[in-house]
Length: 504
Image 1 (spheres, rainbow, N blue to C red):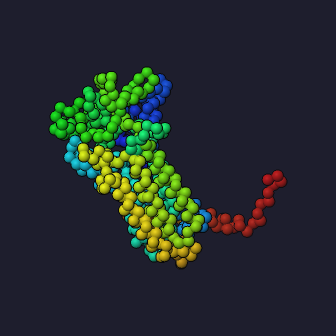
Image 2: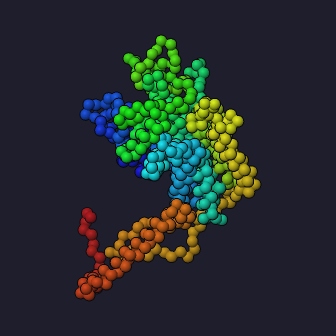
Image 3: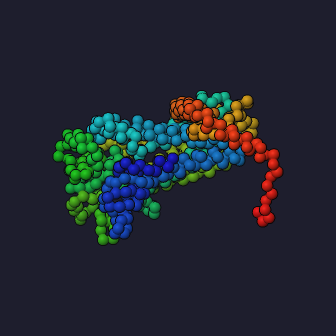
């Protein structure tokens, strides 16, 4: 999992807040301060190699939470599973969350960015693959829930009927609510998914950097709004991409070398303010404010908004997490806590969406807010679907769920299993890939570890064959020496043991 934190060749400026970045200027901290031989000073550069990203860090904490809760409830005896099962659950959870959340964002929220034509879409296949697999910004929580459900269903098919999949889902629901706390914190730190316009009297209203529906920073230049778009690293891709921009808006492209300003009237359809650097830091200039004639290029920020990420952190994360912990001590049937999560989370999300700015991808001239169905946002529509799933689960497990107290240990110990043979002298090193590591529960087959396991078995056979050949090639004279040594030790065994000297 530590590999999540380290992408030495990954260079990007999409959405996420970088905690540590290595650039030509030195070690960049929080993407704002650089540490080099001149000390700590503000950093004005861009690019560099990402060492630690806040978004990845929060995902790592969420996944560690999965392992923690499964291990804790196993040790308490509430979840009767073998010690290796939490690792299998973590493996399938990671696959379901990462693949499901990314797939939902790609196909529901932003398909043009991944499959559309330039200038917003990829310029070729390699650019498309880079956007899909190296740009982990853009993750949909409803897709993550669907991905985990799919992994649980496949796991149940592989290991039924004994697998306590419903109770495993109970612990997964608790871990998911814990993870939601950290993911919403990451949203807040990334200044994304911010809220709707807040009233002037709200003391905690905030301004956030403005991005277009494609994730590009929006700037104010020459009296108009532009998207600030980084050029592709490949010169051939950059040329095709730049031609696409110029064809989409002739005369609306300003090339600054490493990045391009693209004039797009649909870049941002909400109200905005201008952020100017003054003597005492940033000065906010309201849009069309009299007496201000702006020349040059300026950052664009939102008008005062609700910090809806923090609202959702409390609603979807903290409150749901506490309720599920209370439910765990009270429910008697497995599956009820999982049903509670799939009901409470979308309910909390539905409420929070009234304070959250709908996705800018769905904004149009006739629909500046970006709603999609009877005044509801896409998040609210998906929440209603998820809530229906949760209610169906609740009705099913309420009557047909297994009694938790009657649950047997899983996987059951195999009777008559052959004992491990003693390790031979000078035997080749065996890869410690035991059956319990995904094998006895079926999780390894789902995750594709079956091929790895088979390859390792073939490799061990090859090693054994080489070892036997080496042993057969040893001269007979060399084999007689150990025998003589053994006979000598047998003769010495009849003697009385040496007595220790005083003081030993």
